[in-house]
Structures are given as structure tokens and as C-alpha cells.
Length: 244
Image (cartoon, rainbow, N blue to C red; front, top):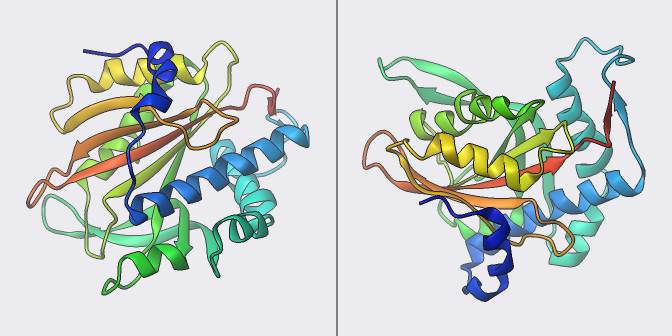
């Protein structure tokens, strides 16, 4: 059954459960993403499609601006709030995965985050990082790309050689005001409802008190022991940020 998001948000505070330290650290990072999103809105930042002189794909251009102008610049807000010594954001970092036929491939990660607190939680594991993949949702039918193109499907299918957290991140740049985060989440759920590796559809969670655009889903990997993992979704309204 697909739960209506508008109803689910009304009960979000009643469903809070204690979090492990590992979960808290992931959610702290995502809180910071939303804090930077608030700064973009406060700054009244805009990015023009027609005036963009970059040769970079516009989806990647938006990601680069988020990382270069905000995530990397305001790390003191994260460090002061969560008392961590180090956090770093990179773009298009590469990790290796094994395809179904056994060959090794390069996996590009949109936003690659290293955090000392997260590393400390996974003692004994090297190269601990949190991955966030970005996708634009220009029209509602782009939710299929949000599932298929290097995002949910990628998280399910690709067997990475290195250690991968049981939590992944996805971020959407939503172009149209009418396509609210709730509407987009419900549309994604319609498409995911028949996916055999999806155990729990997107449901709302509170990651930042000022934003109702955060969701979590649960899936199983399509290889080995079919381990369960979660995806945190940030569905950001960029309708006032992106201009033609």
C-alpha cells in the first residue's frame, strides 16, 4: 500500500525512534545539505539555463554549485553543531564495482563525503565515505530516471569492491513548483511498487526542522547475501533557483 505523504508527515514526530550513532552521523550530514539549501534560498541564488555558458551538463552544473559555493564553504556550521574535526566534499570521485559478467567498471559518485565521525563509527573499515547521487526532475516523468539512471537501480545492482555503507543518498533538483516533494515522492513510489528489491517505499523523515522534503526507503542488494540498505532522499524545490 502506498501511504499518502501528506498524511505521513502529520505523524512523523510520533514515529521517532532512537537512532544508532552511525545513523545519527549520516543524518547529521544530510541536515547540513538542507542547511546549505536554506542558505541558497536566503541568498536568493539563481542559475539560468539560457545564460549558462558552461559546457557542463546542467544537472552537474547545479551539483557543482551546491558543492563549491555552499557545502565546502560553510563546513564550520557543521563542525560547530556536531563537534566534528573534519568533513570533506568531493565531486565525481570514482570507485570500482564488478558487473554481472565479472568485469570491473568505474563508478562515478556525484557527491562523495568523508567525515571523521563517520569513519570512527566504522572502526576497522578503511576508506569510509557516504555517497550522494544527484538527478534533475524537470517534469514528473523524470522520476523514472531518478530510479533507473545511476541512482536507485545503481545502488541495488552494483557490487563494489570497496566497503559500501548500508546507507546511500539521493538528491533531486525539482524544476517545477507544482511538483512538490510530496507529489514527486508519491510518483517515485508508484514506479517502485513493483520493484522486487524494494522493501519499503519512500516515507517522510525529519532531517531539518525547516524542510519537509526528506524521505527514506529500504532495499536489498541484488547480489551476494542480498543485504538490506537504506536510501535517504532529499527532494529539493529548485523552482525559484532555476530560471530559463
